[in-house]
Image (spheres, rainbow over the protein chains, first blue to last red):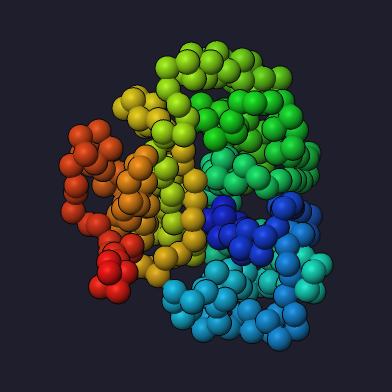
Length: 182
Length: 133
């Protein structure tokens, strides 16, 4: 994975497979503590203790079409090599919260990448799910909520190419204003 | 075009798209749209499936193809990612492998527009002999 937006896209797929209706994605850039935190929270099926224990094992997956599951191990590797970590809290029927922390200034910290494009694609590809994105930094806060967007769109489909393009631009404009990255 | 920065800006776009959809629905049935599903799991994402999905979304209109673009999971063809499953109305789905934006362009010009097959089709939905019987 080249950047954090790819990791986010990837981890959110786990929430989707767990039948989440509502997925929160939070990105916090704290330069005072030199930390970048990504938190992905869902209201999906959740995991029992046994699954939760095995979820970091690259040779564990809930899929049957292949034998490896690399999403969480790859994220953990990237977080740990910047001095950060990944924690996962979950219980059956209660959803899951995954928190990844990175040292913001670390050379090996993956760049944010195309956050706007990732969120626009997730919104377009999952019209039946709700996404809430919250980005905070020393410069301010931005919140994107697909419920607001859907309400505004009415019967215009959220996956119309022109709408997807507009959503991407909307997020990109706002994120670039508060991001602490170059 | 003006910048899109607030939900109010998005609403203006909505008005324009609404007008376009009204025109379209008079002439075509939305059920007859092509379905394009892009594999979006760890293997797909690291191979560039996000760029592939964006490419389809951005180039359908100019090519005159009406399609719904969504995502799907991993089908087990990890070494052939990004994979894209295309279902034309009333047809069996076809899964294409290694669909970079360049390959997507070829699929657009040949399969979607002229109904010609291209190289790189994966045996994802072949029937077994039992299945055919």
